[in-house]
Image (cartoon, rainbow, N blue to C red; front, side):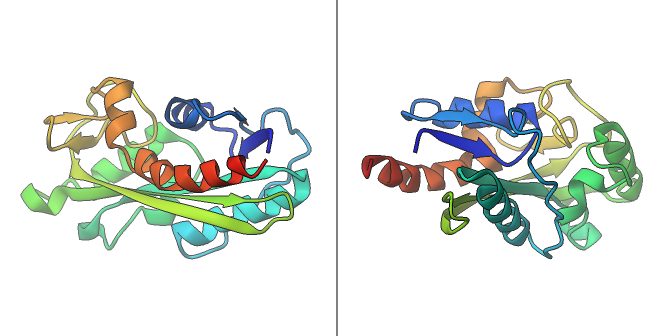
Length: 201
């Protein structure tokens, strides 16, 4: 194992991964060096299912180790929405501004504990044969603000209030998010599996 590919072209996700796992003796990259990488249809009905599709299909196509990651925001008062549709909640994949606006509109009538929400991240590691080697899942609980706060992070971060700080991920420094976030927890669970794979070489 010389390289692990994050099955995404989201540079901010890659930066978070490198901050959390960059001390391991392996190169981390995203799909940028792989223009031939297929687009994986996220047809599963769960974060784990979609992360598994990304990991296994991309590992087989690229013949390398891949971490497939799927994440999103769940609001119990909205029946769990946006959920697995978080990145395309407003219709266009990755339009953070539109997604945030739609969420604020959907929650305009909600107050107090009704504004509770949690982030979910599932990370799945597949070997070059496309076999799942292990996975981790993390959650981060908080509340949705009534307006955008801060310019850091991405996705719903300017709306997601971390109770321990009373500030959104958009307002908090990146190093705080890297300690507390759902993605940090998922990758922390995946770390011993990666270390085990690396020790075999």
